[in-house]
Image (tube, rainbow, N blue to C red; front, side, top):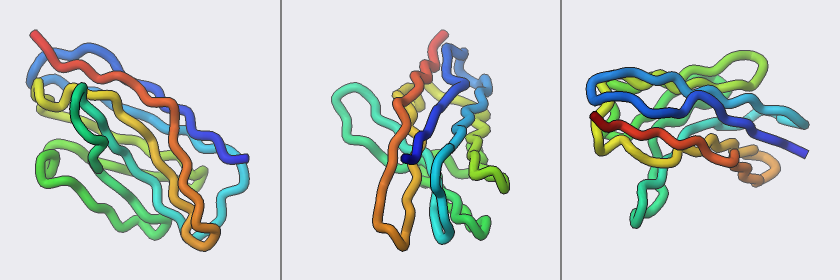
Length: 116
C-alpha cells in the first residue's frame, strides 16, 4: 500500500517562502511521476508542478520562476515556494502516479496561507 505524507505548510506573508515535503512509502516502481496540486476554496484542484522519476519537471504558468520541485532516490518530493502571493493560498496535495500500474495516490493535504 502506497502512502504519501505531506508537511511544511503554514502561514506566511506575501513575498515569503515555504518548503513543502512529501514522503512516500510502499511499493513504488518506475516509471512514475510525483507532483503537487492545490485547491483553493470554491475552485477546482489544479496542477502546480510535477517531476518524473527521470527528473523531468513541469510547472503551471502561474508558478514558473517562483516554485521549484525536486525529488530524490528515496521517492520523496519537495516543493520550494518563493515570492509567495495571496493567490497561492490553498490546500496543497502531494500526488503520485504509477504509470505501468495505472494507479494514482494522494496525500492528505497541507494548508498554505499567504496573508499579511
